[in-house]
Amino acid sequence: MRINEHPIIDFDHSKKIHFTYNGKSMFGYEGDTIAAALFDNGIRYFSDSVIYKRPRGLYCAIGNCGSCNMQVNGEDNVKTCMTLLEENMEVISEISEDKDD
Image 1 (cartoon, rainbow, N blue to C red):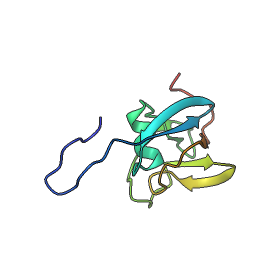
Image 2 (image 1 turned 180 degrees about the horizontal axis):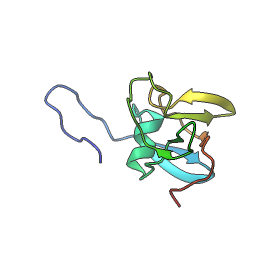
Image 3 (image 1 turned 135 degrees about the vertical axis):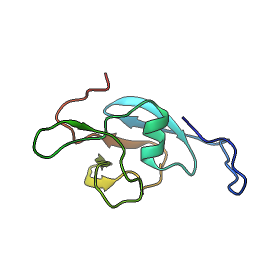
Image 4 (image 1 turned 90 degrees about the vertical axis):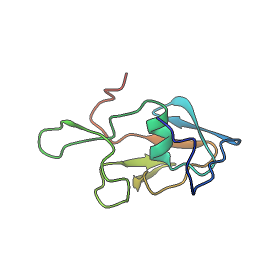
């Protein structure tokens, strides 16, 4: 789901940005966070619960919870909800297995 119209914010979806997630080619738009682009590409499983390893989705989207932490361009524990998408980023989940397949 993507918001296309807003009474205050002007969304510009003219510039596509390409990136990879677990080796799969995806795209978002300039101004998107990594998490927003992943969600728009159908990714709903962002992390595992600590004890039982149950799937967790995007939770707070303001950088407080760590549910969206992933490896970005080789750096671990990047908060994808706070990090803007850049061209050719390599995003790798830190989950036990990819359950979005």
